[in-house]
Image 1 (cartoon, one colour):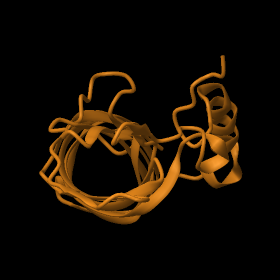
Image 2: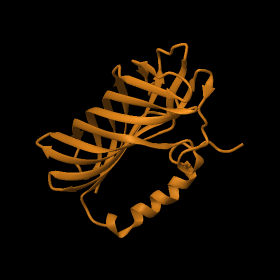
Image 3: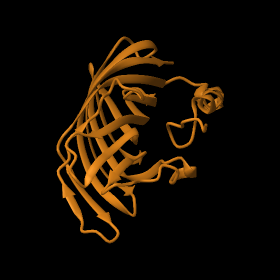
Image 4: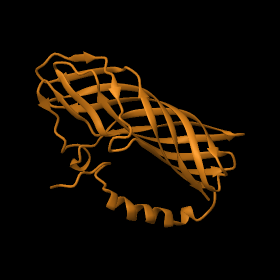
Length: 223
């Protein structure tokens, strides 16, 4: 059986040596770097969904989504930052999940459970005890859906893994850090995000907008 891949065709065994090489590079020899891993609870608001399928009338729906953050695969955020005093630049990936909770007769299943992955470049500013962040980037999705009895193929997209570069995203956040930026610390954060994606369905495509609030906490380390 082909092993399940959770992000753009890369398995955990692929990520470990890549990560070790990345942090062994000369760019990470200096100071001012942080790395963070956070978990939390997202809340997605009712949004808009438009489905176009060949030979059928368009479907419009106001979807409601559950995230199930503690079901596998886990909801999480990873972030790598480079700071110059109180100002920083960060690369972030927020791994969210969407499970449609109000299906219809035609929209039997609409799920993005192995990744509604928001990848953003953030500008971060620390003022006193508060950290402000704004960021923009792209969404990589792994859609699983069944529309009018037809299931979308999951072996297409990036390298045939079922992942698709799907659209833009933006975020804003306010947070705090328990502990010094140098050494271990505990990050806390409230984040808002807005995304628009186009994902495949069988014999067609779906346009989806998603606005969400996120409460996050985790662990971090700086040097």
